[in-house]
Length: 196
Image 1 (cartoon, rainbow, N blue to C red):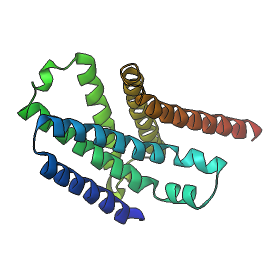
Image 2: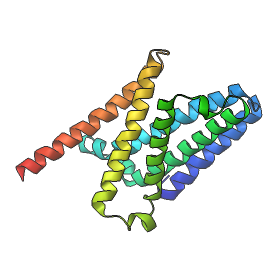
Image 3: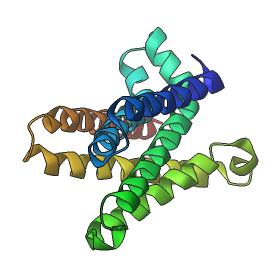
């Protein structure tokens, strides 16, 4: 469960789950809605592990946090792959069972385009061929801004859904924890800079 093996295992497992789920429950609106919920939550958890890895190791340096930090790039790629598969499920649902995206709210469409643009750029620049064509500073800017944009999208969504279903308060809490870890890491870096 390291590096590319991690990406393969996560991706293949997800695809097999989708195939089996549709095979059992049929290809219908209800099945796609359940798969959309699962894929969104699954990718969210992978993202949280990826985006908080460098912060968690500051508090708990053990085998798990070291594994998270070592495999952060591959966890990020896995997140991007699962979230693009989530997009494919969403397009499929809209094409076969519900009105097209044109009936979605403008805010949702713009937010989705921005989020997926960042995910795509972060995915591409996770590969050496593209990352070598960027300065380290610009690469860091892209991945930090993109990471916060994605975290904001999840946080706003789960905050809104919490009012409809208390279950989402658990996911919202996870998002808040990730925000807290990132803020603490940022403050620690500032303290270290001032000491120097």
